[in-house]
Each structure stands twice: as C-alpha cells, then as structure tokens.
Image 1 (cartoon, rainbow, N blue to C red):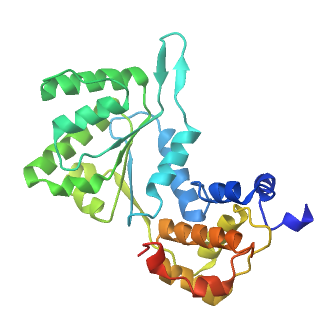
Image 2: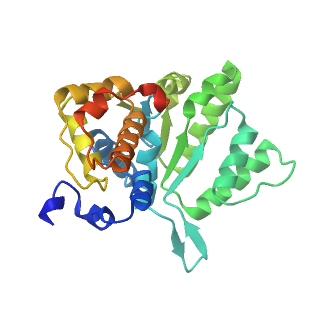
Image 3: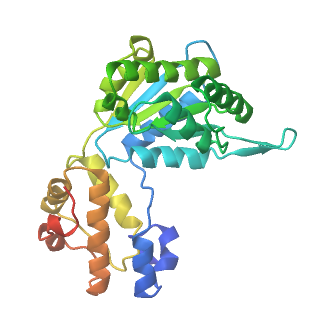
Length: 289
C-alpha cells in the first residue's frame, strides 16, 4: 500500500469504492485532532476527574461560530458514554449536555434539561417543582459534569432575567458539586461576568480563528489524510494563505472548502486537490464567510 501512504490506513478501504460512495464518505463529519482541541479535551478530562468539593472549578470555551466548540464536546461525550448500573437499573451519565434556551427563562431551561435526561416534565409545574424533579433525577444519573452550550443566549434577556439564570447555574453546580462547562461565542464571557461569584470560578479558554502557521498546516494535513483521494495533495504556501483568507480562519468553513474541492477532484478525475483549485476557489459557491 505504498501508493496510499499519503492517507491514514483507516481510509485505505474507501479508496477503491465507486465514485458515489467515496463522495458520501468525504461528506461525513469527521474529527481531526489538533493541538488547541487536544488542550481543551485535556482540560475537560481534568475537570471530570476533579474530586467533589464546595467550590468546583468551571471552564468557559469561547470562540466564533464554526470554530469547533460543539465538536470538541461531542468528541468528549463519545469518550464518556452512559453506563448502565445493574443494581439500580439506571443509566448513569458522566456528562450531561444541554443548550441554553433562546432567552433566559428558568422554566424553559428546566424543561429542556429534563428532556435531555429523558424525563418528561410534569404539566403546569411550578419552578420549584421543576427544580426538585431536575435535582432528584440528576442525582440519580450521577453526572460528573454539566455542559451548557450557546450560553451567550443569556444576554438576550433583561438584567434581572440574566441574574436569575446565572443564580440557577451556580445553584446547580453547588448542589450537585460538579463542574460547569459553558460554550459560546465571545459574548459568552460577558454573560458569565454578570455573576461575580460564578465568574471567579470559570477558567476562560478561547478558540481563535486560524492563521497560516504550523498548527494550521497540521490541521490541513490531518484533514487531507482522512479523504480517500488516490493521489497525494501538495499545497503551496500561497494556497494555504488562500484557505485561511477564504474561510476567515473558521474551522467549519475550512472543512467545507476542502470537502468541496475534494469532491470536485473526484468528479474531474484529478484525484488530488491542486494549489490552482484553491487559488481559483470562489467563496460564494459554498456560502462561506
């Protein structure tokens, strides 16, 4: 298989598949390891193993939309799946992930949280009843981490609504004695700062847009090794700069661009992405910004 040494061995079985099946494989979501994401995963692992105490540490992962925050959490959740406890008959979930509601509202948040853990909330329940049910069920499934995505949605509410939701998050972390991990855009930092006590427990971790450096080249190299193209792709520095410029340095846009170019390479019979294809790429064709 020396002719395929430009690919990861796991990709080799896909190289001889029909054109349509190779294109379907290229369009699948895929995880590509890179240093900043690995650091984030390491921080999550450290938090998950943190012993219970009165003031638990928390983590805020922020970055522009499309920088890979959700993919990092999904990767982490796959590494820590639910475990069935035969003695209690309960599926214990090490990591619970819930998305912040579009505007801060305690009742809607508890409804969403209960739905995520598979417990339909009672009809016409008060906030107190929802809180009691959520705490009881969370204690049963024994989470070691609560992840709140799109936390910047907090700033859509009034100052009073924001404070009440931040108090709710602080209450859950204190009551369950588990770390909170919040994900969001750069505005998420402003949302968390609304509660000084909560903010002091959060370690900020940013995912900045890509630049044309060694880390970006490593990301592109890993991505290209995961695509079943029969010939190796060799990119020039100008092509790499174009990738950064055309994508705005946003991970999702980079992946979209490479995916489209790889599909075009198969359809055209080129079997590789050429620097010229990248330099001539029209951003408007993919909607990237």
